[in-house]
Length: 144
Image (spheres, rainbow, N blue to C red):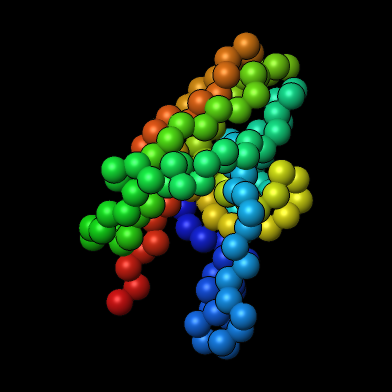
């Protein structure tokens, strides 16, 4: 299930309820590819094919600026990617991706959110994993 990490939730709570200096906005965002739910800290089910690395979202504004960026429905508020993202070519062994993680660093860093792919994506050796426009939907469930 998609949603914000404990780190992101804590940043929001600190900003609004403790009146801290505010949310630490990262200079760049990075995506990780997962074969299952990334878990609370983003380290579960990370794809491990040869040559895999997180991918920097080159233009965060364009990535989040598609025509379907923010929607509301019974499930809550949605943020949908407006640009595609390409990962390194698959080597070693194929896999099926089901989730993407959002991070503030190429390695290490803070895990910000887990996002379900709208459909599982299966890749073989030699394929270039691409998460197409509108294939990521981050949902913040309506609580009230």
